[in-house]
Amino acid sequence: MTELADLEARANAARRRTGEEGLVVCDNLVRVYRTDKVEVQALQGLDLVVGEGECVALVGASGSGKSTLLSILSGLDLPTAGRAKVAGHDLLSMGRRERLGYRRNTVGFVWQQTGRNLLPYLTALENVALPMKYARVPRRERAARAAELLGVLGVAYCRDRRPAELSGGEQQRIAVAVASANAPRVLLADEPTGELDTASGEEVFAALRRANEELGATVLVVTHDPLVSGQVRRTVRIRDGRTSTETLREQGGAGEEFTVLDRAGRLQLPRDYVERYGLRGRVRLTEEPDHIGVWGEGPDSSPAGP
Image 1 (spheres, one colour):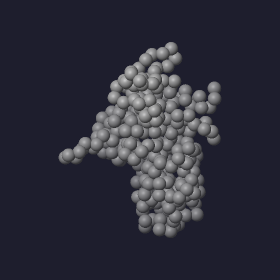
Image 2 (cartoon, rainbow, N blue to C red):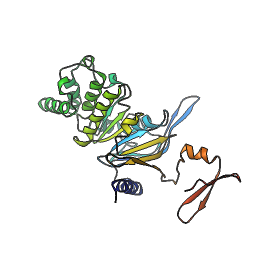
Image 3 (cartoon, one colour):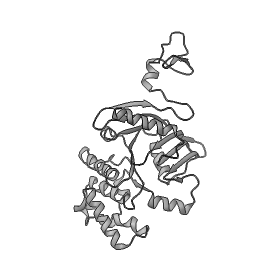
Image 4 (tube, rainbow, N blue to C red):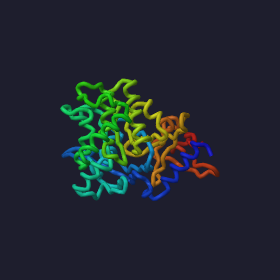
């Protein structure tokens, strides 16, 4: 079995299981934002299973629901319906105290805006040590671990500098260290390279890979950068609030894209297929010996099956 085939088999097996075996499990996740006059459905029944140790890129157009998903997984937002579990924590039923502990110890978060990640009046070392203070780690251990994290992520030389003395790329790599301070099971990053040039962005993503490979964090990163999404073995595309497709890659090789069939039996056909075959409104399905045919309603429609 090839590496890609093995990846596909494991991904499909994860979806067939009940989901309790995934570190991150989203089942029919819904998030609706309401105001007096407007209702926005940011997530519309999203399913996702991420195994421990994975490094996954989440991609999709603006407004597709990527950042909403990360806000829910980080404990900053609550879903409207469905199920979301991270490392055994039920995100819908947690009380305030459990949610605070969850955000301190189970997940780490890196924002796109460099100014949101670091306190301007603290040095890099002090910024990294601060989350450990709230987790009641002894002071001597805090300084030692903060120095170790800065070294692992390649910014040990920045330890005594404040954010104003750092480049954007350095700030984001230190932000990865801050997010990793309490050894979280899951590290979430929302467009961490969005404000950086290509070279700095590559350094930041290298830091995220080290957090995954050397520090043991499961990493979910939202990105529009194809250079970032092309460096992970699994890319999940979100469209209209649902998981649309997944791309699985062999290490160092090309990837293969798969359409995701959710637990309700729904799938999203790629837009170019819909346009190419003139599919709209109702479609007709035909059962063939080795595939399912998808036909448009009109008499001149062509089959959209293999």
